[in-house]
Image (cartoon, rainbow, N blue to C red):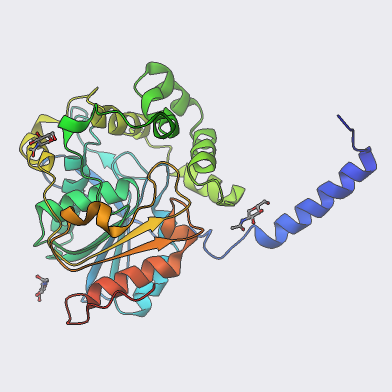
Length: 341
Ligand SMILES: *[C@@H]1O[C@H](CO)[C@@H](O)[C@H](O)[C@H]1NC(C)=O
Ligand SMILES: *[C@@H]1O[C@H](CO)[C@@H](O)[C@H](O)[C@H]1NC(C)=O
Ligand SMILES: *[C@@H]1O[C@H](CO)[C@@H](O)[C@H](O)[C@H]1NC(C)=O
């Protein structure tokens, strides 16, 4: 090992930190604010924290984040949509930010039916008849489920990784070992050790998951800190581990969702106009062509692969994410061209 003389080390440090200074505050390390709270009704009584902007009579767009992320992923997408006259709603998932369960006995379930129902419950509370439902990662699970079950409410969909609704009968079908290795945290979260680790250090867990799952994404420490604040939620750990435990059949669903959960097992197709996005630098959910998930789409659909982009698409490629929303709005206007976004 070669040791760097101290003076050199200091010089390098200064150089590095001045370079970091210049690039560590991209405009999209912004926090969405101010936030509002609204109480949603059945099946789970929640107080959902959300950001809203744009004209009240604009076409509604609901944006749903992933894990471990926050609504701030959408900080740069939101102004692009507002410029075009949309009414934009960005909400924290159950277990994130200021979203709270109002009843201590409500099961802390993150099953797909619950995440999808929360979108519809939020629309009900806000008196929104229909919307474009858009998401990535867990947000894709949420918008896929909501759109498959309530196509009259989510009348257009934008989703990363196309279609992530799970048929539980296939939960124990193994993947090849390299794929299983990328899913190490799914299995660790089945154990008390995994839950304790996440509770101990949400920030370092987030750093590790981002680094491993989007290896070419140079996120800033500032954005990591900003996101981590949304993970200090009393239900965060329960919700995070439940998502993986439920998908691997190690945690039962909430009985309140049993009918919806059964319907989702049949993997109902997306019948409304859809734009799907596969980030090429995502490790766990590997990019694919449209044909891989074609059977899940019976309406007009455009599919795009995004080179150089990892899991957090709205943060890494805000213009592409916004363009996907513009494109899905033209899909049922007789313009079914799937041009580059
Ligand atoms: C959405 O609701 C509006 C009224 O709020 C209605 O005019 C429009 O046709 C609906 N869109 C779809 C696709 O159902
Ligand atoms: C991220 O940083 C690495 C190493 O510093 C560099 O090689 C790479 O080009 C950067 N990627 C992007 C997308 O800026
Ligand atoms: C789920 O998948 C299994 C195995 O492929 C299949 O037999 C079953 O019919 C599917 N469930 C539903 C509800 O469609």
